[in-house]
Length: 336
Image (cartoon, rainbow, N blue to C red; front, side):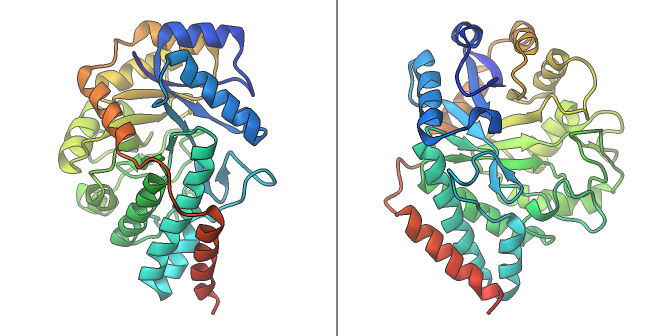
């Protein structure tokens, strides 16, 4: 198995994609808006991916947070609120906010499970910082670490109840970044002591099944390399100081925060200690290059992947409409 997650070009698999995926046997796939049109089309696509590998338990993920980060959109699928909505409710009623997040994530997870999607790149545990770039912004659950952790844990629980694996991101924290890592490499000059604020939610949820790195350079830990490519950040900060023991994905390797070719980035990320290289843009040359450069997935990473997929329940007994109604009633407290 190649320790990579690949994107797809369109609404159906091409002949070349089908042949390549069968031969390369990647760890999983990620879907975007270009892969999503209707309920029937999306389910057929995920069913075909599972048929290629002969297993129903396949890591097929998507970025479906709510707010401005949503690949499955109205009118086919409902809209979901961004993290900031639950942060505002927490100001008035913490227990209600936690339950609202859980119900929201379970409803969202039911949409994904119905489509054959097994994992969501959600929740964000980034602690919002004043003056930082808004690439995180309203996606965050707030500026207080333990609030972020409490709401993040509720989101993971809701997804799991729907049968979907959650992924905490962006380890060890993107909330201070003054630039958008999609476009350039952010450099954070905060002290190691100040960065403890950023680590706190990840430490509280270090038992999460999956995590995603941040393409951010933290000068207190590594003056040269972004976290994704830094052996020190992966080993000493993420694995030891945070204590994260789950499956560690990179953020998208196509992002402009990183230099070198995409296959080179993948090789460096795996060498730094990441379990899986995430390559989103479905460029065949890049995917082939990654498959050629990377070693086979390690036994340890394969075990983490299997544990993640086995960590969730098989189908919620709650009705989607009931979950949404419960969430909305709780969120209404913010304007009561």
